[in-house]
Image (cartoon, rainbow, N blue to C red; front, side, top):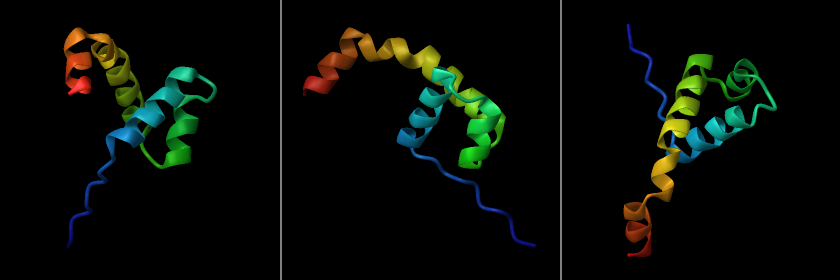
Length: 67
């Protein structure tokens, strides 16, 4: 019996899905069904984006981007 391979999603894909969930035009279930992932995964990506968004505006991030 072979194991199913885990899906690997790019950070760009995760961000796109998380932003769509934050916008709220569709439910998490609708988004998950459209892209073929579990609704819990969409919720986790949404929560992660919301908690990490403040790092985008930190001073260290801007210094790193300018290099």
